[in-house]
Length: 212
Image 1 (cartoon, rainbow, N blue to C red):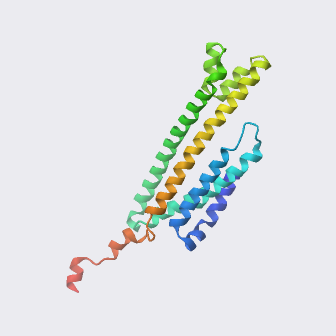
Image 2 (spheres, one colour):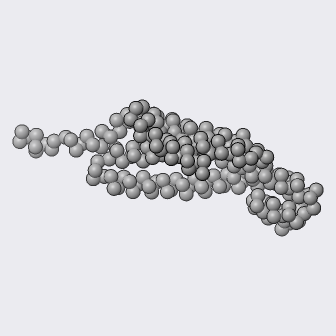
């Protein structure tokens, strides 16, 4: 809910900021703000309450709201009216591909980091219990529920730390990608992107010029 509220707030002011400063500046700022929100997740520990999570979600969501809708509008503004449908479809397709690839890659980062971090805490567990605990943090807690408290507590704490370490690595990876993307947008997005494809339509045809 904090992220959604912040996203709506950022989207509500993005057009006004773009009108004043230009989309070429506002989109990278939104990406950088989102990267800052992800960086805040790195400071969260297993003992942190939701009070530490909510501010990070707020910052991350505000950055998304500031840049994401404006980026979609920028794509459409760069197209002629006859290309708008194709451009919108291509933009949504690329967004879907990015979401799928991002989820798979970041999920792999979390999983591999968790498995490597929790490994030492699984020494001494039976084979099946070790496999279950190594599969994920939920599995580790399920195994711990059947163990004596002196053994269960270190296991659950190690699993929590390993999972949070994996989430931190995923957040750092995403933050770096956002910063790199923001720099590319700032460098490569034309100041007057709407004129790139609209200009050829304004040029008179050679035959029309000849008749004139």
